[in-house]
Length: 463
Ligand SMILES: Cc1cc2nc3c(=O)[nH]c(=O)nc-3n(C[C@H](O)[C@H](O)[C@H](O)COP(=O)(O)OP(=O)(O)OC[C@H]3O[C@@H](n4cnc5c(N)ncnc54)[C@H](O)[C@@H]3O)c2cc1C
Image (cartoon, rainbow, N blue to C red):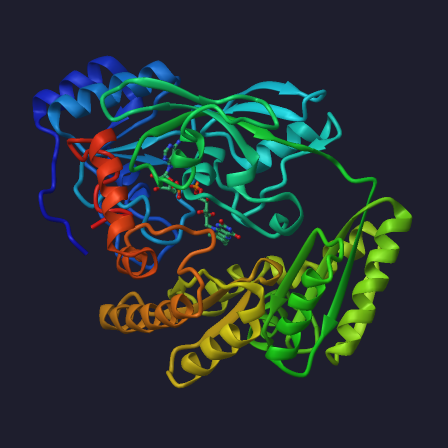
């Protein structure tokens, strides 16, 4: 990891920023530590200071000041990202967005909401429920909407409702020099000029700081039901999931767990699920539709040797069926105390999915690191979780070599090194391998045009 050209604020800068932001500017050691890492296994890096802005104008003031003084700025949401995204590699300021957490406007007739970037998705959904609405993107962690937009997040419901790329309609953002820009409109369609909204979605805080977001939301379905089914082999389960999507079956969620993930969930939550490759489904619609959709899935999985198909439309039973999936990440943290997780995030075209998962399983099985595989298989997207000991930094180097070779294999299969987590500092080389030098050079030109002093989240996405 490169920490060259680190910038620490001098006493004049500290005094100036303190005089503007008061207690919302801090150099308190424990606050710096909280902003020194995300959920990845990368060793922490302290920022020089942390600021908590309250509105777009304050973000503009901070960026304008930092741009003039060449101080790096890293926007910080919930810190749940997985590729070292929020590590302040060059020091400077970590800008914590979580005090900008208002719901500005809910428009049920348009199925649209406008929120501040630091609002979390759970807080948004708690409020939307009283309107009979929900925001669909669910990355597992209680991330901020700004962080989710900035990583191009997706999740378990993407197969039916889309990812952040489909659900962000408009943005207010602040450029590196403090200029405030508005992109997009709260409309279903838009064909006006370059698509700046989608340029910023997934830009990981390297092009601008997002302050307000207009999102699509959906009516809460009349009925939800769930199903679970087990397979003899990893390949059978994954092939069944691909077939279900290829046949156009109406599923709202379709998640895969390998035997190790189920074993971890059993241990962690005292469950007694059969420790076999498992597919979990959720169906949304009218009571008749959810039943007939489940019936179609039951018929398809049977052709792939699926056994013990269980279906329920009872709410608490539905939640219980999904417990193993919700535990997939956290059970590893609890079962291996003191260890960290390296998570891959590869995605392939559906026709290559079974082969891709099988290939990763085979490669990881030749090493000694504990691992499990699960993911959003209906999107061709799966995660390999590999356990590493942070007290032995060589392990992390070895694991990153393995994950890099997995990514190369997937890229060669026409896949991507990241379906939803983003590049951060962990996949910079894979981005070049996947996209090619010319496309990366174009990205660098865009970065230089928007942030000529390179103050926004330096060391991420591009080398
Ligand atoms: C258990 C677990 C499960 C997960 N599952 C998924 C999953 O299924 N799908 C998925 O997509 N992700 C998943 N993630 C990763 C993570 O939750 C997402 O990347 C999430 O979108 C990050 O949001 P955050 O608020 O935590 O952002 P942070 O981690 O704080 O920041 C992420 C990036 O966005 C930038 N950023 C944050 N706020 C802003 C802003 N307002 N303006 C500009 N840039 C900003 C940061 O600088 C950084 O580069 C998972 C993480 C965990 C721990």
